[in-house]
Length: 200
Image 1 (cartoon, one colour):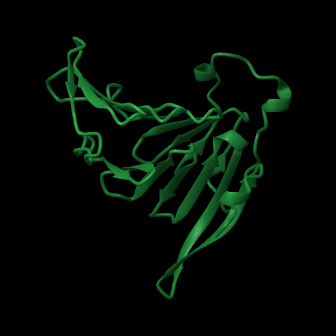
Image 2 (image 1 turned 90 degrees about the vertical axis):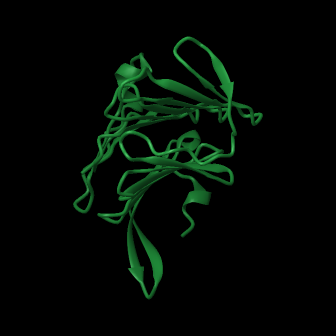
């Protein structure tokens, strides 16, 4: 269903062998692997998610003109494709300023707190306190990125939750199960240490 793999071509340099840790196959998992610097995840909707150790975060959708980027300083850029027109760019600065750019560089200021409209692939962006959440068209998976760089990906159909803390090079996968109206989580894989993400 999903693949978690290194992205050496994107990092643009070769890592020493001690950083190229191939994580083992677990019997109750999808398969994951990594090189200790870049988390890369492919979702069922063909989104490619890249999470860097410095907190930089990207989502590449099937259309090459539909990309979301959040820098380590929380500056967010949305490249949005259109059916018959050139893509547009929405920039959200850490100081609260937000504006739209066209391909000619023309700037139009916009409301930084607005919930974003639905994209061509049917996904949407939700603006939350101290976080941004990207939801797929059918809401069968969601990507939650907190301002401190922590990323949580939830696959609702297979009830799997993936947690990433790039600054600590930490990754954890948990199975989710609802019992008596409450969601419980069972850890099935962990790489690295990040105490505040180990809480239920």
